[in-house]
Length: 108
Image: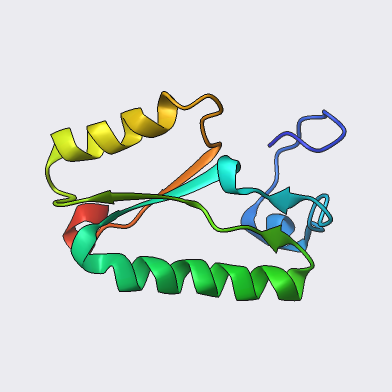
């Protein structure tokens, strides 16, 4: 793991949990992140954003609304690729993309 001061550190999970949040005054801006989701799961994608937003307030971090990427079928690799390509081809591509998978079998 690379620390904020540029040094490398090997840490275990317990140590990671004890690390302070780095730069909590920085915002996660609209251009920095995106949520890719299946059209029929818009409500769940919106709930995910709202939950992250509420948690960020408690942590003192500003999380702006993401770029939303909606596909008809998440299990169609061509649709997912087109959605991701649209993000990558932007002037300033996001640093984080959250892909919402509708079923547990997709996570394996």
